Image (tube, rainbow, N blue to C red; front, side, top):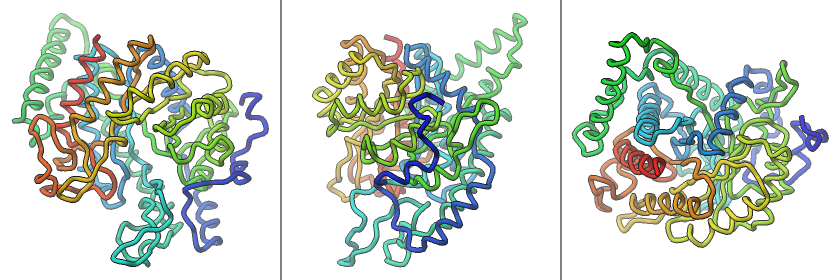
Length: 449
């Protein structure tokens, strides 16, 4: 532990103001649940967390690229093998496109196995003229818009833990048991994507990879090695409910350092990154790689102070800055941030979240995002980093492997009036598998520059 964090313990955040916490009505039940969680096995292990940090250190210098993606907010009912498989499948497809067409190793991190909490702009909302508590993710309450379903229930944190464990078990089986083998690269293509322009482009790339593997075997180079038959896949979520995070924070028996074992990587949101707040206090003491979302309302001095607080040793791979400015705002807000961080000499992974600041309400009613706006922000992100002499090191998407109709545009030119065909999210709109592949091909061209 650094000198800076010697006055830290995993409960010290409780002496600071903690925003975005559910108003748990039964304090005794809440404490009992946290006590139970603190005795349960860790979801991830310190050695895995250290391995991710080493890989992210390569993204700082441009020797690797971070792909982070998954659901906006996971739902308990979606913790099924087919849904987990389809999300993993599209992330594996995107990674292989970025690796093969982009020519760079890809660090694969899912928004999965714990993304059950969500921040809200208000503690309450009005539904049919009635004020009820806001939905804060399945780990707090139910999305059902009735008062009794919105009462925060700490037992949901236990359920979130067990479903995260089940998800991780399946992810490990898939990524280490043959499903993620490069020989299966063609089998990852979803049925509804295969006949699309992106599906055909992916099939061509998959055939090239298969031919390369066959050639290696023909000349006597074995492909029966972990790099070909397994995939390294890591989990992440926003560290929001601090009682839950504290309960899963453990001291590593080999190094003595403290790790939040709820996920390999944690990020802090735009709403909870107060320099003297509870979230910064908690995260400064755990040794996980950390992300920080940064939106248009940032103050440069605050960002620099937070980076210093969270990473006083300036360790490469510890900090990922996830910018979310929108297609219309990125040219204004990103350059001064880049210059300030660069001048301070901080080693960070620069990642772009092109989703959140490009959300709007469609004429047909639901929230949506335009594929062109997402791509525009990404392109601008790369170009601004190139012009500033810094490394565009990663991307952060809300996506799903399912055939949803939540974001307009893309190769099929999904229109506003088609959104209701298969609009499934209870949170923010996601790219579907086809749109995700199209995005990956576009990013690969930028990486190769």
